[in-house]
Image (tube, rainbow, N blue to C red; front, side, top):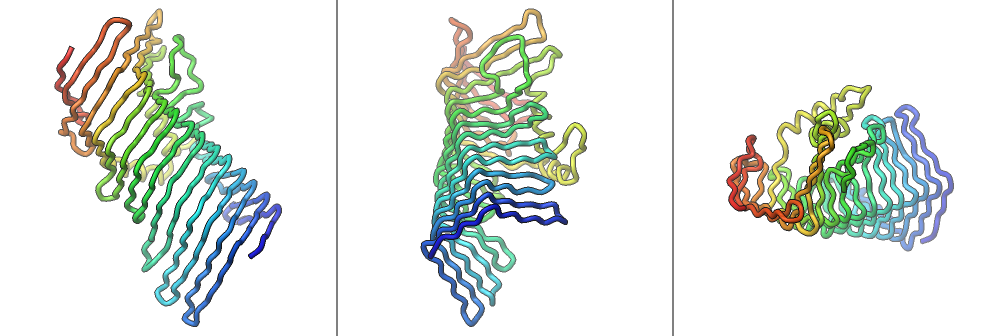
Length: 363
């Protein structure tokens, strides 16, 4: 056991233009064991803490920086030389503070104030097959993903907690629940509208909860239920007659594909675009919107500008399946328009039919 402190560590791979710098590295081992059998099998185990301060790393594709990384727990590395098996197992807590990640080719910048992972991770390679097993929970503080060049915020939230993450192998995982506070999706910082509306984001919620998520590479994603509280969404037509949905979707595609104003999509992004022609199935048992929720419509293409708001008392949709265009999804909508008009609708809709057909009844 013992403590080791290194100051101002710097590594560079000049040929690949890669670099890694650490302001400070602290290793505090409570126990360290190393065994090497005559057969060549290796076992290395360590229990203690690792603290990394002022981490900076990068290559031409991206840069990452973190003010502090703190690991506390157990690490075990084992190697079976005869079978050519290598495995790393960890159990403990990893905390990050002020993470920043930049991808210049895509004009993307990620900011993450804090992150705490608590649990176990097992990683290995056996018979040229990747093995991955994970159990634990993840807490995230304020996060934002932005394109500063386009002055566009793609995704942001104040906090997220993911409970009981279980990764069975690289192709399957289960999550018991996800809770997100103050979610914002698709906000243009450069927008200057003629009508003051809330919110500035395309969609935002005060609390979003997702329960029982199952992912399988062969089956897709299935979710038991999703609930959005205080959902606010805005549909805006600008002075040129363009809808914000129509403008935002190409922008998101460009951001994710790597296309910039001066750069064509890369070969990799073209392959990704080809793969996206067969989207992964998503099945959702029930989606519910509650609380002080609304859909606002703003038209800056008329004079004077027009604004109207539909206030939801309740919106419920069930039996959603993106892989089945003929799937009928029952829905129930209770809403108010203005101060006196009320709206109550029930019916079924084929949400993924190209014509988006529906049978509706109500008043």
